[in-house]
Length: 117
Image (cartoon, rainbow, N blue to C red; front, side, top):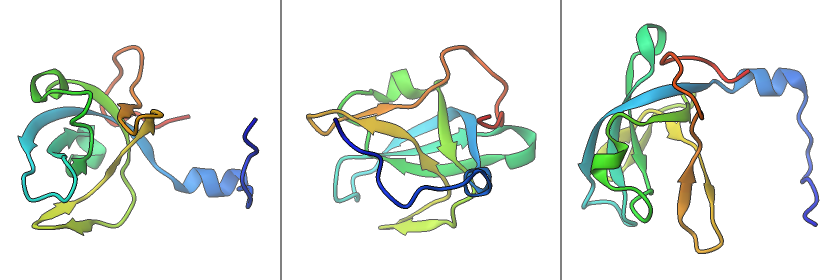
């Protein structure tokens, strides 16, 4: 059984991370990426707006099935340059043993911008 890694965080640390639900409104190929990825535009509602992200999720998801899908992302990281693309949020997911990423998603539809409680 894997142990929880140190250092442990406290509630205030967790509260600093803004994990919010957004709906993918645009999916494009990202041929310039070093590893296969998509360029995404994600709508996080009125308060946060639309943000861009690069996501290495091509193993399990097609462009068509991603369009309109709700995902969970960190929206308060600083923007990060990934090749010619500026990523503005971090889409979350879980690595399978084969390295493919399974997206973290709400199991029921929820308002864009809802924050993880």
